[in-house]
Length: 441
Ligand code: GLN
Image (cartoon, rainbow, N blue to C red):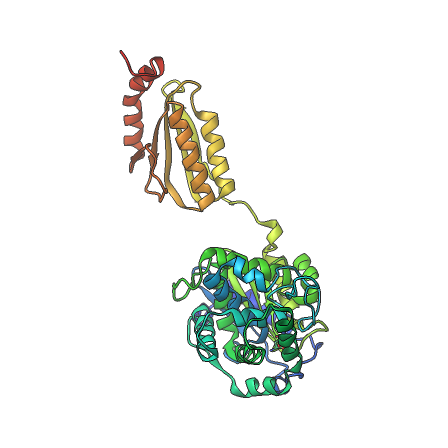
């Protein structure tokens, strides 16, 4: 992690500052309903951030491992969504915020389904869905998947597991109720046992940041570069986290912090800034709804300070179109684009194209050699616009080597000057075609 480089880096400094300030918060209670959890050190406090480029930062105690508990829920949901698809999963569990406690006995009166996969009932149902020939294989798959999210093999804390087995009657009751309503197809005892094991998987706050960053990065672990789940699955999981990850405080969390997140009773909290980073905090004392006091406070400030609230979703900062001009008496349009193209950036490019293209068919040079990437919406928009311009009779050249899906029938060039010279040479032919659309002379 880069914090070990020495010297001052601003991100580490910000984390260290949050660590210093919120370390002084003394409120909250360490969970003890699973007796082993009560042994946690209430002063342990660490923050870790992992960027999509695999840059790691941390402050406080980040090497201490703790059981992930409910923090496993989004990642096991990802596994099941990747294996079975959203429709199949939806048959067993909803995707609506319950606004209730994590261990609420809340099953829909009509469907019998738990409200969402982030409360215990929903998570038990999701765990039972992991395809396997038996409970041993099922848990092995879960453990393996959690390890791929973290980028290293994880293991189970047998003491915490046994402690929850000994006291987990409420979860057992939930599993039996769900078998009663028909949403849990497997054996309730086995399902809940696998869930207890999953909750007892240990990881550090650094691991948890990598797990969050993998979701931020569309399912690719930014450290190992391995694709763990398909991108649409990562998006679905983040949506569920945004709505339901913070239990009955999900509303105020979204309002104040505005990031998909998940908390667990051991004091872990992971939040995801999509396309940016994963951040994790560990500090055992919990507030009244079961969220970690210091984690919530620190991430609220971090989100405000760095403008991370999702509803701000800033458009690309740098100008997308640094040059938009015409030559040859307005008959050749040159549009230069740069940076990463998303919907907004593509809209800017298309607006410039529309403004600069000649009323009658002429030549268009779209210079994309300074574009660093395009998301699928931008790609589709540009492809469609280029096709329409060609259909309207324009001579279209794209400069740069970009991964278009079709590569259409437009001309391609690697050199802007050459493309402009060629466009100039093509002009008379374009004009001829325009005069006589059938090409007859
Ligand atoms: N294992 C815990 C339970 O089921 C997980 C709950 C949590 O982290 N909120 O009670």
